[in-house]
Image (cartoon, rainbow, N blue to C red):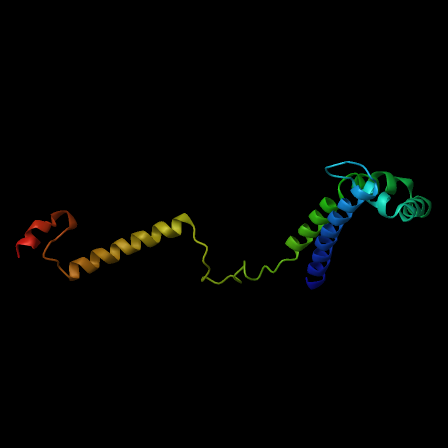
Length: 152
């Protein structure tokens, strides 16, 4: 759980760093390109030799399909999007769920509509019993006349 949170936060921080790298890549490429750049363009602007070496290494020591169908589509997307979504997903999966689950005890704060209605019926019954025990001089609320109170 702690390792997952660490990896998730590291990916979110890497996504923020990739956002900065994307902005600086726009300046390095000396293009007046405003908008979103793919991760391939950003990496090609900052580390072109390492990007080519990584491609050669993956295609030589594994299958070409891994580069073509796994890494290449990931590099089409913006790096901050890929890393950020993966980091947020890992953080969501590794969150502390003990506060959300109450270990089966009955003292949880989550109520259904039926529970609320049952509580209201119980409160009405209690109030009816309470009114029978303590009679009021006004009787029911509909019989209350404030003008009689002003005369007293």
